[in-house]
Amino acid sequence: MPEWDDEIENYIVSMNDRGLPVNRAAVIFYAKVVANRKIGVKSRHMYGGNNSVDLTSVNIIEELRKIEELLEPYELKNIMNFDETGIYYEQLPTRTISKLPMGGLKKSKKRFTVGLLTNYNGSYKAPLVVLGKKAKPKETTKKSILFNRSTAIGGTHHVDYRHSAPSAWMTTKIFEKYIKKLNSSFMYDNNRKVAILVDNASVHKLKTEYSNIKLIFLPANTTSKLQPLDAGELSLTSDKQLLFYLSLYI
Image (tube, rainbow, N blue to C red; front, side, top):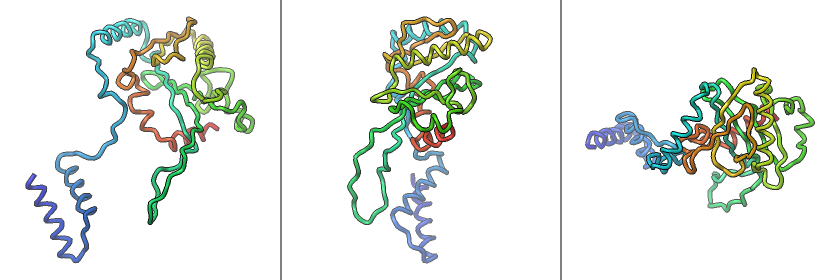
C-alpha cells in the first residue's frame, strides 16, 4: 500500500533529521505498528486444531444431533466438560541470550496430568485432579488439609491427587474412581443430575452407568472445535502458569 510506504519513509526521514540511528528491526517494528493502526492486524497465536475439523460431514452431523437430544433434559448449569492437560514441570527454556550459539539440553519427561471439570455457565469449577508418579508426594503430608478425599465438590483450593505410575497419565481405573466420587457428591447435592462431555479416549469409556452422571462422548477428532476446554484454553496456558496455579494448591 503506497500510503504505508510513505508513512514508513517519513518515519525514517524524521529519525535521520534528529540524528537518531534506524536499523532494520526498528523499521519492521514501526511497520507492524502502522499495520495494527491502519487495519487492526497483529501477530496472533494460532491455537487448537479447529481449522482442520469438518463438522459438515453426514456422520458428525448425525452424532451431534444425538448429543443434542441427550443434553435436552439438562439445565445449562448441569452441562459440564472434563478434559486433561499435561505439565512438564522440569523442562528448561528453549531460548537463551548468548554471544555464541549454544547446544540445548535433553528435555525432561517428568510431568503431572491435571484434570479440569467445569460447567456451561462457569458457576461450578471442580477441584483439580492431579495425577503424578509418586504414591505419596511430600505435599500431601505437609499440606494435607488441601488434599480433599471426602467429596468431589470440596473447597476452592482442594486437590484430588491420584497416583499413576509409571507415566502419570489418566487411566480407566483412575477415571472410574473419579466419576464414582463425583456421582456420590452430586447425589448429596440435592440429587443433582449432570451431563459431562468428554472426548472419546478409551480411558473415558466406562461400562458402569451412574445415577447422577451421564457421560456423553464427543465425535472423534472434533474436540478442538466442540470441546470448550480443548478449544485453545489449555493450549494457551503455559506450563509456568499451570505450575503457579498448582502452587496455590500444593
